[in-house]
Structures are given as structure tokens and as C-alpha cells.
Image (cartoon, rainbow, N blue to C red; front, side, top):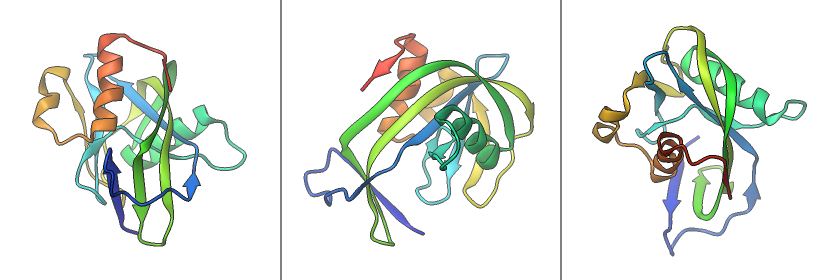
Length: 155
């Protein structure tokens, strides 16, 4: 399913759903941050996705991280709640989502960076190298908040 992202775009379509999603900002022993390159947009992002019925937001973040990157992580903190009615994601099936994400901080426990059907690149990136990657502005904000130590973000 294809998707188009709109960020502060006055011509974005109106949202018709609000789906709870969770991200996990995983940091390895050297301080590098885990990123995945999304196949649907080509941009680098934190691992994350929609919460399933029957799981907590934190469980969702850990599950999505493993599914999308091959990395096993545990949660060590909470970065914040990121909601932006001007960040719209339109899917080819007609669903148009308003962005809503709980973002957790985690540490590497095991696994190896692994590509899959959602991500064609997975790696740990040092903060000094982040500007070399095409990262969506919403993810840049979350990473920036982490690097600045300004958590939790509430809104």
C-alpha cells in the first residue's frame, strides 16, 4: 500500500482516522541511534507503527522495532507524545491519518540490523552524522528532543 506524507501543507487532504502509533528511539552503547529507511517513502525514520488491539503502547514500540529492524530492545524511558494535525499521511486505500505517536527511548538488547519488506536499510547512526540522512521533519523533531534532553514532549 502506497502512502503520501503531507507536512504543514495547506493542500493536504482532511484526515479521516487517528491511529495510535508508537516509536522506539534505540541507542546503542556508543550513543548511536537506530534508523531504518522506509521502502514506501525512502526516508530514514525511527522504527514504529500502529498499535494492535490487546497490546500496550510500549509493547507496540518494542514489537515494531523488532519487526522493522531485527533489533531486540528494551524501553528505558519515555521521549514524548507527538501529535500534529498538520502532519497527514494519505494511503492509497483511502485512509488519511492524522499523525499521533508515543515515542519511547530504548537500549539495544540483541539482534542484528536486518532489512525486510518495510525497510531497505537499517543502521545505527552517530548524532554527528544525522545530517547526511534524509529524515522526515517529524522524526528530526523527536531525535532532536532526545539529543537536547528535552523530554517528555507533551503534544
